[in-house]
Image (spheres, helix red, strand yellow):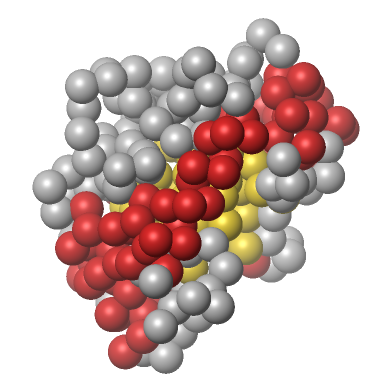
Length: 231
């Protein structure tokens, strides 16, 4: 039974009202959520570029929420250094664009920040063989990075299996590494993802930000799905 497990809902700021960011953040806070998922995208690794560094600096001034930063870039070190300056709580960067993974993890952790390693859908878990014990979080992309604008794109067919396999690996190594899932984390898929072992749900347009419904309604629906997954 997993029913004592705490599942974190991490609203993706990219899915909020980007013209009224402060208002959006205050609405999220009002719903009692304490973590904000922030994508840093360079326009090369992934085609979109939703938020700049200065915008994140301004966001830091208006909220005490935990900043869960996901760097999608070909130049990880630059963005890691910039995020360290902003006082964020977790930084995840991609395995696929990193030459010095161990060094980046140490750089993040030595600054008192949680370190996460992000994996694209097709990247095998075997790349974690030596580095897993050093990671606070493994962020599994369940769709291809940056293509969330394609509303027809579904999670990869092996999404649940990958989460299950990672959860088993973490248990075998007796670690407490978090599993974060990102990409079409929808009301339909949340129960299965939670059951498979997900700890942090990046909430976007198919869950917390479903159009025509309030944030409160969507959060309630998400919580119901989480409970279903924990039973």
